[in-house]
Image 1 (tube, rainbow, N blue to C red):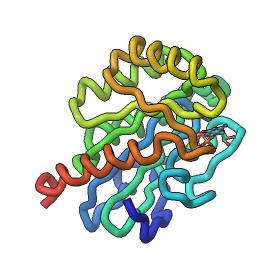
Image 2: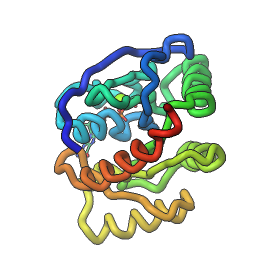
Image 3: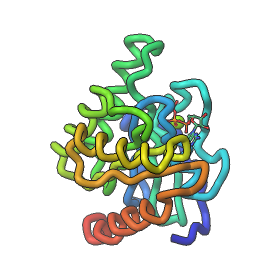
Image 4: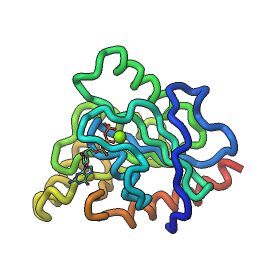
Length: 199
Ligand SMILES: Nc1nc2c(ncn2[C@@H]2O[C@H](COP(=O)(O)OP(=O)(O)OP(=O)(O)O)[C@@H](O)[C@H]2O)c(=O)[nH]1
Ligand SMILES: [Mg+2]
């Protein structure tokens, strides 16, 4: 897809702050804290620093909305499973993210970002179960693949597929752009089939 414009719209901490007009399809990025969600967004868009990234886990605290090509939105969700975040913040995360996943009719695709180097955690399995339960479109992306050999990557992708019980897991790297075109194909497919839904 050709990106003609990409801009940050707003951060939202609750439902009444989600963008309302116009109604546009949204693609959400979910996953563990520090896994590389914001980096996936920036690399897909080819814009450095649009979604804030950091080596400190917990960088993204709210739901961050980005408007792309004035036609659809990307939503960067806060990461889960960061131990040092206080209990009440953890509870708020759960509420914010689960509210969004359960209620947002504009959501057409959830991109679950996992670390290609590690076995998925309990939280990953839980999120995946959630997404399967809601029966909306989803895609699992295993990022940071540049840190692995081809052989190790293949083994890990198989492991991740097994643990998450997902037929397809795409190898990705924000550093090299690996997997970028494939992810865009899936995004494009979701946007195309959502057209009627939102009219
Ligand atoms: N080598 C490599 N490093 C990456 C890749 N993607 C992200 N990183 C690094 O991983 C760290 C975390 O990336 P972020 O994109 O901020 O992760 P996040 O999931 O948005 O983190 P939170 O918002 O804190 O949940 C940063 O230091 C990135 O530079 C990748 O594909 N390859
Ligand atoms: Mg982030």
